[in-house]
Length: 133
Length: 391
Image (tube, rainbow over the protein chains, first blue to last red):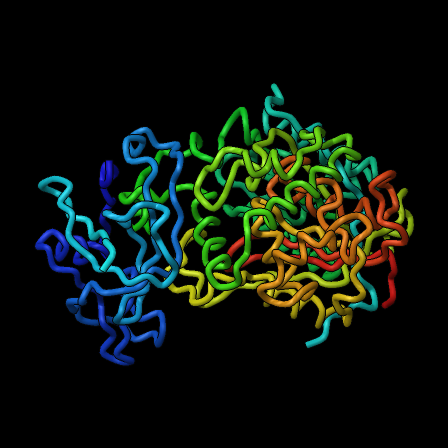
């Protein structure tokens, strides 16, 4: 089941998951070069500047690439098979990977527009999934 | 910065265990078997070998355990990388640096694994804890090696129109070579129909796009050009060796978040560096041994190393260019898709055998120079090997 394995949060990632828990998709934005980054890092991977505020993103993006998981070695995800995992090019710049939902596997196209939405797994976890825009 | 290729170090020994699905022996026993065979192959003994290098993913023995079990008299360098398929070329290059710097006389490089009966990289070998970068992938169900390569492969298909049948041509071609390799685990010919009907694992990748899971060990022995003259077999010189990284590499092997272009891999950068060091060009290369954890890495390697243009790897592979009589015979022993998966060590070993002229019915005639890669994604390593000391 989507979200059956919970993320093991760490000191760098904690704010990301805490914002998602409040159903607010935020990433760090460098106050040096102005770029958003994903995944969370203590400094900007583009210019090296430390810090950066957590800023809300639109959730709009395009499919850069994807695959269909036809089988899985993980018993906790067997009921989801086949499911789609996509690399999303977000409008604001960074890329993220997530589940593409509400889309049959044979309808996915490269560069297809998608939109993020919150998926509450349980009281401790909200994931950010994508659907066709 | 030009490489000192006037006196390149040489690979003088090769050792393999049998490759199987269930070795019935420990990774220590396998490692010692392969290392002893490499020493015997070279005609070097326990007083001659004084360095041991290896890599693993916490699924094998330490370099120290092997030097102890071999009863090496002196060890002046020993190391063990926690790393995967990016390592073999880089460790052979490290062995070269050690012998040419006078730190060691002769250095063993080995990989030993019970990849089928023990720790399986495909799944059962790990605990599925979503730590580090996995916390951003695993909760969604993104967690296996084939899935990561499928993500790269799909973008190549979107951008260049690469087709399943073109990946299939690689799988079928490599199997035809494995028929002539007694070490190969798979020695039954497959057809394009078999490929297309093989089980879809993570669309676009099928079962036959994925390498085997193997128990076994493979070892190489490196020494200086001067010492190589007295060894039993003709030396295979290391004309170039490099490891290439990238600022896009992120924090683990499956971290592609910062990667801009997933239609090419590290081999673009690697090829440039190897050709620069050696002064050779793709036209000078007679054999390519490209790290084939998946068919798609072969395609990316053919493009990255300059055997065809970017985006044309599919049609190039399907044209027969990679076959024994093609423009660039590739993965001549069947590769990891058909011979076995010793994490890229056996990929280098096949290049050495080709350059020694030991390959019988799968021998590339008059092979002088071979290129080898280690790795699949953003970073990796590789070598240009030659049976000619000069250019």
